[in-house]
Length: 518
Image 1 (tube, rainbow, N blue to C red):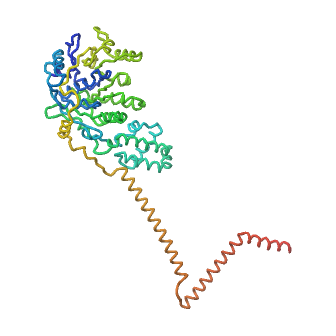
Image 2 (cartoon, rainbow, N blue to C red; image 1 turned 90 degrees about the vertical axis):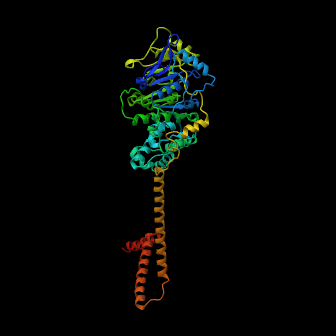
Image 3 (cartoon, rainbow, N blue to C red; image 1 turned 120 degrees about the vertical axis):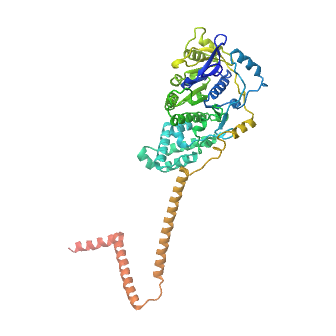
């Protein structure tokens, strides 16, 4: 029982006087969801209370902390907080009788390793499709990248970090002519463009993301000794400076969950709930192949027991094919200042099951901070009637966690020390460097051997010219040999001269004399 609702995550009060409790049923939590609303309308608090509810139900959670506010989940709310009295009043208004302040089990992660445990994957696990998206490559450049991955796979060259990929691309450029015969045109200009894009990624700090030890998905799905699901929080405030890296990482993580987790059908509660904050970054200027992949993952990953919740400012940020799969919705206020805003507001309202007591469009426009228009799946997965809902207050600290407390949480984490030290085993860069070194050494040895042979030939000729006294028999043999050599040299000289201009004149003179005599 959570907030008076059985087997559900309590969201808040509904109905005319917020008397009807609204909750997200755990059985349908893997049917995905949407949290939308303009800046400052309460999306972050809604994300926080959902994470709390799932954790109390024993469901692990993964979310990104874009503004740094969600780290407070690790500590209880304080009675000294300025919002203590309003939160207590709100809890009474919506009938949240078992409301208490408490912290939750949290694991902090950070791609850069500064505010949490490092998160890494290998270049090979990322794959050419997502990597091409990350590097903003053209179709031609993506084709060259696919060829490089294919060659590395055939040759058994592990691609672990960016150095491996850069070394592989150098090899591809050097062997472009041979590769073009097998795979089509491999332009060195495309190889150079990919290398430049990799340099930009390095300058953004992306190099820290690639390598080993790679993230084990099992470390995102822990349950603590009290049966509460651990909340994995990705520090994303610095990561948002490289939005393409942020979006690609989260999509990679979703794809890995989809690939690795077994089928579980429709469980009583999810195995993991995944929140994708600033979801518009995933779809902005995304190629169709990538959008199709997101749609496929969203459609099929629910059978793996994973619920995916997109958090964004406007439902229009999410493509229709993906939006149609988000059955649980919390819609905060949308402001309509332009004709385009009014159109999007009307479209957002049309996606809800109407409530005869009020206009959904008016409600979405008029709800205040901390209020929302909600709709959750009911029996047999049918969408519930839309309700105006006063969102429940959070039990954990509202705002960033104290840095000292954060370091304590990191040190006490079940994965402390597992990812901190980066490994550097033999991979493509080392293998290709060893091959180049061996080839250079073999060339040097051949060059030295040829030089030695030339020197031996010169020494032999010198010894023959300046040899000491010989016996008479040897002198005669030498004279005969010398005479034969002289004869041979004279013959060569005559033949050479006959082939030349003087020879041709002699021949013409002889033949002319013969024919003239006749």
